[in-house]
Structures are given as C-alpha cells and as structure tokens.
Image (tube, rainbow, N blue to C red; front, top):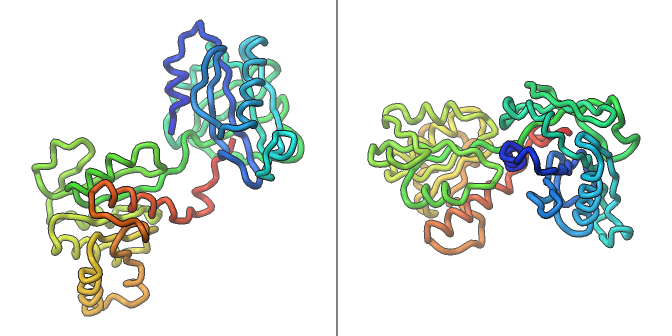
Length: 313
C-alpha cells in the first residue's frame, strides 16, 4: 500500500524522478484518490490505471523532469473521446519533479497518518501529521499556489480477525498481500508459534480477541475444534455487530450452530449475521487455496462505510 514511499526512500539522490498523484476523481475512473506512480527517464513504478490516461500522464511527468526539482502542475483529464476512452469519468492529477532535498517528511511517514502538502511557487512543502484529511474536487478551480492538501497515507484496510492457523488459515494469509485487509491472526496451539504473524493465545481467553475487534472488522472462524468454533461464533454474535462474521463448515454445521444459538437466546436477527459456509458462492473446490481465494473475494465485496472511503489528497 505504500510502495511509492518505499521507492522514494530508496531513491538515489542523483536520479531525477517525477511523481504523479491522483488528487480527485469523478464518475468511473481507473484508480482512486491517493494513487501514485513514479516516473524516471527510463522507467516507471506503480500505475494510475494504465491506458491512454496513464500514457498522457507519463508524458507530462517526463516533461516536468526538464524543469527544476520542486516544479509541479495540476492536470485535469476528462475520460472521454479526447483520450480515446468511454469511461465518462474525470481525473485530477498532480505531476511534480520530486525534490530530493525536500524528503525529510519520509522519516515520519506511516500507514494511516496524514501527509500535508503546501503548494508553493516552484516547490511543494510537506510534513506528516495526524489529521484531518481534506477532500479535493475533480471539478472547479484547480489547486494553485498556496493550496494546502492533506491525505491519508496508504489506504483504508479492513481489519481481518482470522481464527485458525491450519491449512486454510495459512492459505488466506498467503493470498492477503496487496489486498485492502489488515490481518490479525490467532490460534490456541503452541505448535503455530513458529509461523510469522500468528498470535498464540490461551484457549481460555480467546473470546476476548473477538471482543477487541473493531466494528468494521471481518471475523473469520476456522479453528481445528468445533467447540472452539462455537465459542468464537457466540462471542462474535454477542457483541456489537461486526462487518462480517464467517464460519467455515457445511450446511449441517450451520444448522447445528444456529439451533444451539437459538437455545441460548440469540435472536433470529442476530443469528442472521452469521455467514456459514464461507466463500464466494459459485466457487467450487475444497483445496485450501481455492477456499482462501473465495473467502477473500467475499470480504472484498463487503460495503465500506462512507468514513472509511475518504482518502483526500
């Protein structure tokens, strides 16, 4: 999520580089606000969506390299016939010649913090703070000298609380890279202490991990023990609603768990929050990697709350 920052950190001081930032979009656009790519005379890192838009933007980026470090311009692109595209959207870009002497803010950059950029004559002054972000429009007056921009670094990632480090759990962890998900992974078996990322917790306190999950989290339960699965399911349904409560298992397992939950006084409305079996409908196969991809695709379909979508630039 922060590849462009890592690239800047590793950039040789003598190599001129331009940066393209998506400030705002309207309608159908290939990438959203906060997306960046870096361009040198010979190469590129990242993408703002490809196609004619990216081709034109890269041309502008290489052109700005002919100007002194710190030079910048704001460009608007309607995604219509002039670009040979039919998306119908609109994109506002910031194109700049990165000044290597003005990268001190990189030391404070971290996922979730706010990057503040002040547009100055022939320069962009930046620092990192803790907010708030500022939304930018794709229409109207373009940002000009004196404009202050503030954006969340990285992008919002849904917390995924994964219970179980067996074959399916490991497959999910393998495939999560590059997705807008933040993994918190738990198991009760000490044998999994050697797997990076797994938190081995006592069985007596594992329900507490469910209680600590934020409301926008997805909880996915796939432990080695049906009794433990039930306890975790009950804990997930006994707290304020989560974005997703998923349980691995068959229709028979689902029926048994729902019946037991009913006997324990869990209302029909709350029981309806349980997703079991898990995985995108229509994806068949019981191989761990197939299940993992189906589950991750299902999580990517979850709606985001409006406050989670805002990435200002």
